[in-house]
Image (tube, rainbow, N blue to C red):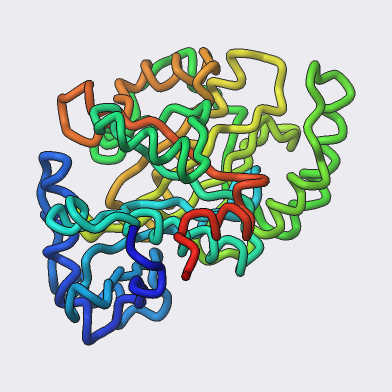
Length: 347
């Protein structure tokens, strides 16, 4: 394995962004896709935008000249689990990967270091099921990733055409909107009320801390679905999400946290929240995609997605083998010990 001192990373800037489209296309081709975005927009999004949605680092190796050998792109996110990183892409050129070991490990070294520096709680990413077994072995055994109990749904049809009118899911007594600081007291009160009869209590303090963080974060929002009496039936974290393949910004929502024991109202709350998110997607211009994660064992959430003809997210269209599954690093693996284990000891 190459010495870590031979690797280095550099943020995308006006001088090196010229290398990025070919790297993104290499990543896309690896998954039987292609870079369909705009080189001009890519340059604007990362060299002229006041605050880019995503962060991109180019990876170099001293023995490989001045051209980058790969890149990684990630979005900062806030969820009920805390603040963290959603890794959009990590790619090392094929000709480099085949004979220079350690480049992928160096990418995760940088990601964990970023998480530590910014006191983040997790790193998450999606993996296509048709990746080589060595890829999963690397994520699980080398990086310390674990498969997450979360399924990602693609609501592209909903985004473009609107929601299907399922009569039983339409409840005129429900409304949804983005939370504001003035809602914090009511949110706490509703959580405390729910916990009195909940089979499993919600940890209120960490959740409230994460909601407060989301309300001031440039990528994050929290949606509240309330009934006509003002009682919160569900809350949902969502985050802006940048697609390098298409140079567009979209939205990725987290599983809804239910504050109702009524199965139908829960599903109605999902529809009500989805309508509000779709409205705000168009208002904000984040129309690139609409992805919503649900807990894999949540049959009611799956039923709602089925009612809207939402498809489980795939890397390659119409190829079920490329279904995306979620992985994550957290707790003891967001540590200096894990970070340093990813690089060889210097002599």
